[in-house]
Length: 300
Figure 1 (cartoon, rainbow, N blue to C red):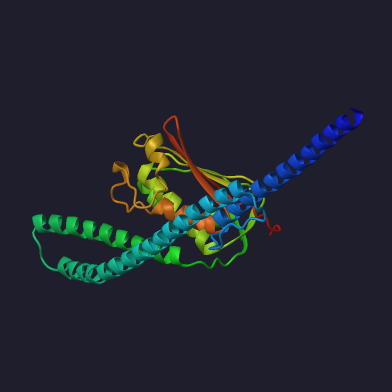
Figure 2 (cartoon, helix red, strand yellow; figure 1 turned 120 degrees about the vertical axis):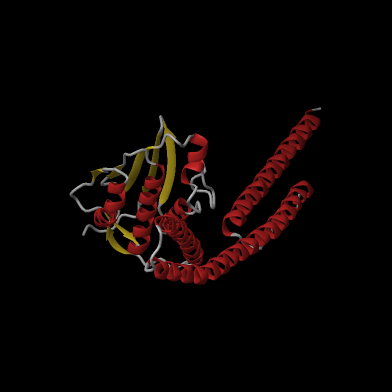
């Protein structure tokens, strides 16, 4: 009787050990699947999941995930190809438009030298204004494709204070024309980061241009010693939904209908290329665009 009990205990003990081993192997297989899936999503590699486990259910799960990875790979390829074709088409269209627009501007300059009636001068001024806007939009489209195609970022030690002050000075006349007197808070201590100076200037220019489009007449620009820059202004013509789409390519709102909708999209792309972050918030009628760079360099 005692021998039978010990045999039973031994059998149960063996079953527990086998179950523990089985659970361990299943957990290891699940971990391999999770880590492998995460790796393939972030790196974009064409390698499929491969399990060390021989468990049928786990291998069936891996096969199912591999099918979805193949589908994702095809969709990613189609997206990249379509995006490249779109950029190429935009570049070609904008390039084709620049030549006739330059000719039109030249003929308008010649026409302004002729004797015209007051009515003709008024019509000419309207045509010249619309042509200038169209030329600006075409240039923005052209530069957009160039910026997205360029992957090289030339980093150097850049004082955010200096670049921000230069950008504000460059837009002073335009802001004054809109009766916007910016409230500026910039620390005396140099806030230095490893950035591309030209790209950073473009970012600030696009943000100031955005303020000109949507501001109700005010603008606050703040730079903190932590490298955070905030552009804030009252924008009653926007709302939370519209503000949330300001970074979308080609998205425009009625308040900024003379724009291609690329300014903030370009700005965020450039910020991300420099390993920074940018976000927009809209609360109580105020638009707040915040960007920050955390790759701290040595002080200048």
